[in-house]
Length: 284
Image (tube, rainbow, N blue to C red; front, side):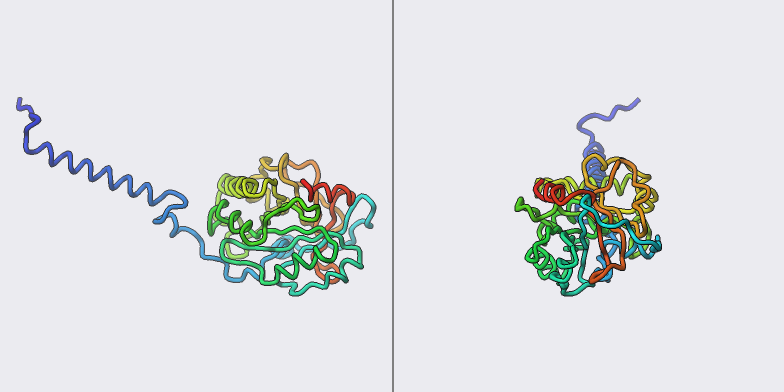
């Protein structure tokens, strides 16, 4: 039986081939890692093409409809609010204030490519009118990572300061305006994307963000995950006379978007508590 000795001229050739194979494998793995340049990036969806048409509830009304019936009358145990985006243009904040509106959420960003061109008028205008205001981000989980979108949001108006008049940022999770309802992600994939977003936002601001979502979308796209209910306040859209069923994990809602056809601007909300509790949420 012949034995291949260490000095054999064939040994180096085999070793070089093995090393080359290992290097090619490592390069392939690196190219496939999230957040690195290469093959993984080609799987990302294109940036939103009509972000001015995407706002909190734009897809809720489209997919779930609007129910008839007025919400319960306002009381000392609730506070009236609105939410706006670029489709509202310059908002008449003094009119809203005089009608009893006391807080506002303003769309700041979408994905990592869009900022609301009316953001300054809406965000600063509501504040100057005396309202407690906050900013929200319209999520597109198939275009970039949760961390990337949270950082973009904070860098473009989504921050928080303890001034008593700024609400924690909000993450708008709803039906995809550009294709697959759940953005082509599994339930676990979406949950992990949101965890990434929330963790990054908290690291940047010190606050746990609010989540905007409907029970129907949440059930369909996250498997009715209960992962966020103990931490993130719930802002729920349901157009009708009651909030209805809540997603898993939440025993109560914090904000209810009860109509998309309200006065002055369409989207009107109720904070589930007194003005003192709203101020407490703003103060952290």
